[in-house]
Length: 353
Image (cartoon, rainbow, N blue to C red; front, side):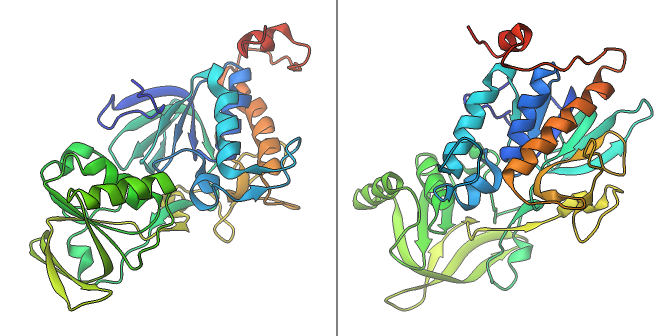
């Protein structure tokens, strides 16, 4: 079951069997879908972010990239769009806003992976394409905020319906803050957007929509900073804020969504029993396999002599990984190397007329 964005809705089927699970939906993970698809290998792609594209989409969507072969200049967002267009024939399934928390080898040689949303995957091959690791939300410097996290303070929106009828305070000035302000406004009892300055880093049309809602008194905008949280047993009741021009005041809020950006950490991968070197995963240069057979690492998260942290290097690694994955997924099938320029079989898979 896939929605229009290609993301599997939360609460869908819990035990999913597939050929390959790719951890990370950045350029290397997306291109791996292409290389695997050419070999008739099915892939599910999991990413902790709420959008596809990894670091390209999250950290520099409009920043130009100059070293992608054949593309003299391309933005991170455009590269993501083109990769998604390229892999359409292979119908990958994306699971966004999810993190793999556990990986366990099974007796039959496959792996069981479990996400933080308690979804389970059974797969023959695991491909770690997680860039520098998993993105972790930055925590606001507020005393006692830990007591509210997961109950009334959230760093992402997993299920919109959980916010119906709530008095919501959203803090931040980027795309995530504005997008969720606009998305939750119709279902919230009240919604307040707070940013430290009256200047936003979000898409201009989102800022225009937000200001229109403020003008219609359907949304409250406060320029200032959060100072203190109030409530018992993890349930937020009100928030003390300091407007830029004015005295401290209390806002009614039983839910807060801070969007203060992301940091990158290796995360649960560090607990999977792989040999690590300075928070990177050593791999061989024949298959880009880790110390655990059947688990591969491509892109910035891997390490080997002469490694260059370039997107084009990750593409090369994904191609060789796919060849090795074929031997695991189809142990009794001989792999015949083919070129897309001359193979009618591959062109048929790609829908080339």
